Image (cartoon, rainbow, N blue to C red):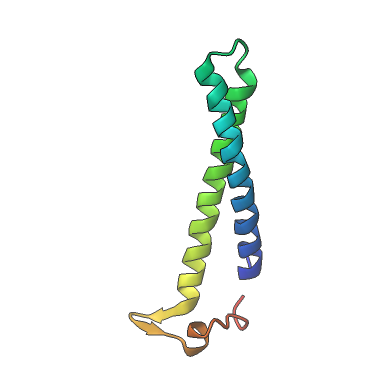
Length: 90
């Protein structure tokens, strides 16, 4: 996966994860109140868990890729990577 694509995926999942936190809060509020039918609330929590998990995995993949592009050896940083220019990499 290209770096730019990885960044777009990470940002998109970040927005979805933020929205899913709001939905999870509302679902947990209904569960705590002891509503009668909680099937939709539990489904919302399960979907939120998957979205947040995917966001964490995408973030770790992105950080690992950026780290690999920025560091070429122990303590040695490539000059173009230090300047933020990753255009020569896939």
